[in-house]
Length: 326
Image 1 (cartoon, rainbow, N blue to C red):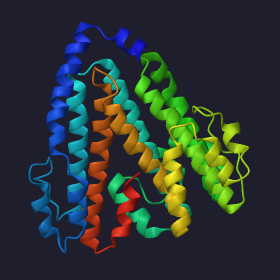
Image 2: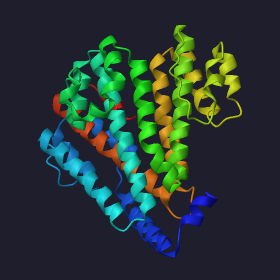
Image 3: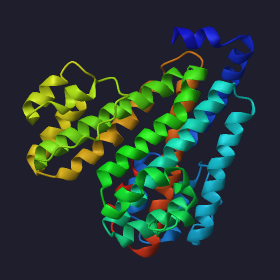
Image 4: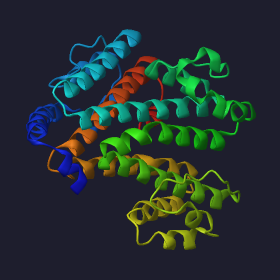
């Protein structure tokens, strides 16, 4: 953080102050979790506008799914443009990294649902992200071009853990130069902590099903060998007791032991994302943390709103909403 502060000159300080003031005003128009829960209980789309007063989405044509998705995407792009107009270069680089991060999560989700032959999920995700539903022909899908060589064989064998590993590594390599060059401390911490959470989740899953993997990311704060070498869940939870991840996974294991729901490990990334974003919001005096938190929050807000409209429009169950909470 000291290095970050040293790089910020007086002009940057004014730019950050202007930016944080604007974002402070915009965050008051965010849709609350309570409103999303209430929207999911709507019987028809006619009830939706009631919840969009005092938000950025009052004028979306909510009864036309394709058009509403297009306008919501435009709203998000316009938001990023507004943030970047008067922002210091560090913020612009942060925006770029977050764009790449959200694209990666979309690709991973789409591959996973295709491998599992889950046509309903792939249909919803395709409409919300704009990614084509058929991912077997990578030549026709622009989002996969830079990943093609790394994942083609694994895709044919339906090896999602290997695909996930390859995509994550390729993503890290593509943004590492930007992070190092601009000394984006908050973004760097985010990426490294994500790697830890992914590795911990992989290990806990492997302990549950009795099958380990070598797909551990090597750029987190915790050495991957320390995670991989644990022989049972109890010893593993103990091994991370002095880390910030202990509380997250202790709660997850308590819930798992009560319900025996293996999908609960998918919640780990969501909990981490929310906690990191909250902490980042107040982690530096110049506002990069606030920008980071706000962009991630707005991205999730747009996805959730798209999901709510799709679910109500097609009469789907509320369970489908959880797909978009990564």
